[in-house]
Image 1 (cartoon, rainbow, N blue to C red):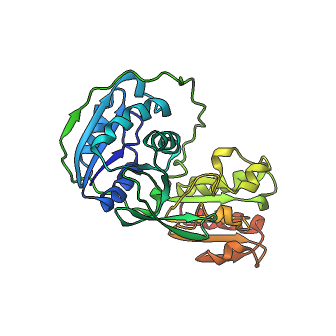
Image 2 (image 1 turned 120 degrees about the vertical axis):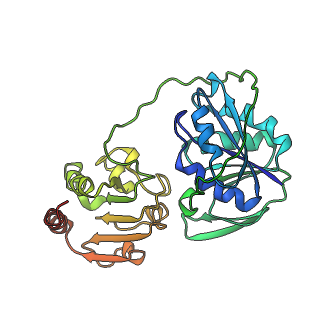
Length: 313
């Protein structure tokens, strides 16, 4: 059984999600090839070749792959699947975009957001906002799998796989990339940050989020939010952590004024250490927290900032 792993990158650097998805792919089978599709992306191919355990890197360097449009990616991946038994990618925005189309063209059921590999045809995945774990066994000849990378350790970079350039056909041209609208920040990206501090409805308004931003700047942390805070207009959508937002698993997650609805817990419960600050001692967030402080956040956060200043941060 040979597995095709689709690399996640920005044409210059390989994303950490690929090394984590590689760990899952290698648990399915030890013969894993990585597909790097992009434009002027040879540096990414070199990085992918260093992932430990990878047998080969396929490099598809063409202008149509500068942005991973679903139609073009599917047109590249599906013909390659004649030589593979499974295709795997990280369950990122990009992977969630093209993998359903790949699965449909292969006429197989997509297996989404796996958190464990039981055997080459059996996987675990969360359901009901993470309140239950479903074991899925697939009888499809080809497997189309997305990986929840927050639960897999990244493969190291001690490998030296050969790189093979492959020819590509003209894409179907069914969609065209227009523009990105990205927020700029000096803080770490939310899904890759080692420390995340998130605010909820208890923050009362967006004007109070700078309190958390000051803490984040001192800790080198990313700032997140619950859906309630986003829906209330306190912060932009890209701050949202949860089932319908971003899934994070930092070393430290600080939840401030967040009650802990199951949709939010689904997006952060795999964090190594969870700290909760909430004045409601019955808040569900305390059930998953390693450390809980029952206190008014408008008293606790300034005190925390003062203590960090004393520590020289």
